Image (cartoon, rainbow, N blue to C red; front, side, top):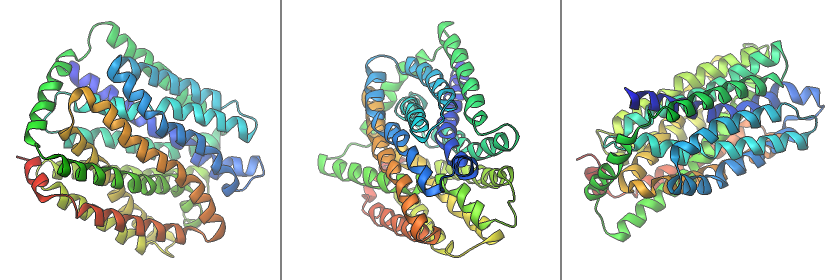
Length: 399
């Protein structure tokens, strides 16, 4: 029971991580561009420092968690991201909002190396737990547009940062209270090394083969980060342009984005179930192939057809997320896991940071069709790299 409560807290943390990182995407698209007299392409580069911090600071966060306390770092995460969001609401210039977003990214950097290491701790089958945790993260993506759009229409854009910040701080205090009361998950921590050793023994392989697996993990992580960040950040603006007759207010744009993200979030659960039972190589290749196909189909679409295809490509974009995390969880020992996850996410999020200026540049010159062409090519590259995963690894992974 205690472990389940802890898992719920960790999943809520994943929800907060992606919600806070994407509030500005909706605020910039639907409010600030009008209030500050700046174009969408001029505004969104100010989100770049936050995404850089989100990636770069994952490594020191993972190192500190392994050396000090994973649970202690989670308390810092909840309270830090809440305070940073409230600070961002005070911004009066683009530079000030960039500083606030940097602070949000700094706090958010804690979650992936620390939270995911806690999720897989003491578990042998990690696909479904990571998928469930991933659904919470994707619901954060979904609710960012919904909550921000709702608050923009009724109170103003500053409230889109203030109220989530207050809730996160309250969650951090509750989590700290749980730990202080001595209701942590010590049993799971003790078992973590045993499960990791068993997984390491199961996946015993020579250094060259292990090196190839890690190269593929980090390559697909990098390109996947570009795909994930481009789609989640740009979708509210895509809907603003392409669902003009369906979405006539910020709230409606937020609702459509929420519906797409919420349904697509369950792609992780499907993929998590599959990778615990079938070849990771085959599942990964199918997901990447579907991404490339759906992005290509999206070219020129508007209205209901654009909405349906958006739902399809988000389903497989979100579905890819747990695959690399499952691989890392199986081939690394507990005492190193936070740092390995940190390196995985520094690659993901550093590339993701570059997607923000890329979206601005492509949108200003050619529009979103060119962006979808780039994303289709990126997914094709992931598909090609996945075919190089050794078949033996896939068989060993689920014995």
